[in-house]
Length: 192
Image 1 (cartoon, rainbow, N blue to C red):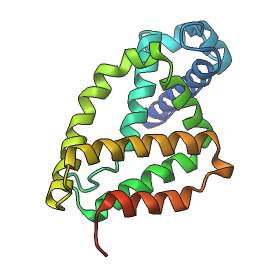
Image 2 (image 1 turned 180 degrees about the horizontal axis):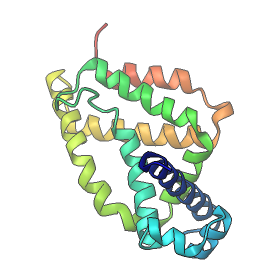
Image 3 (image 1 turned 45 degrees about the vertical axis):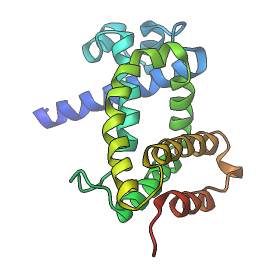
């Protein structure tokens, strides 16, 4: 096998461990789920799982941080530090595209993230990532003349969280397309 083939196998194993762990964390809870349970369900040895993650804490931390990064990846898509109306709309639409593409995964992700013992493990990293994007959003709102930019940024974030959670919990009965457009119209503050 080539080095590229080994790397691909390694990435697949790592993804398998993470997906299996997420499912078990969501189903049984973080503390009751052991590395042995994850390895058994994934069909690998416990020792092999430690080649990928030093501990259960490292595993859940990587799962949760990757999830947060997935959402903020499309924020300020050209990465110039300045949010535009087009980038705002892209972020909203892309967030829900990501959710729609893998609803079962995000349902597990949110249910795991809601466990206090899990959130405590990632709280520091999450709270270190978010201010950069909140500040960018506040500058965006300020430039558009929104009266209370910081408040608007916080409300926008809460609405995105709430709609995301409601959508993944009940995707067949949630008016996602209307919700997306409503968010863009109410929080984008862009005149077309």
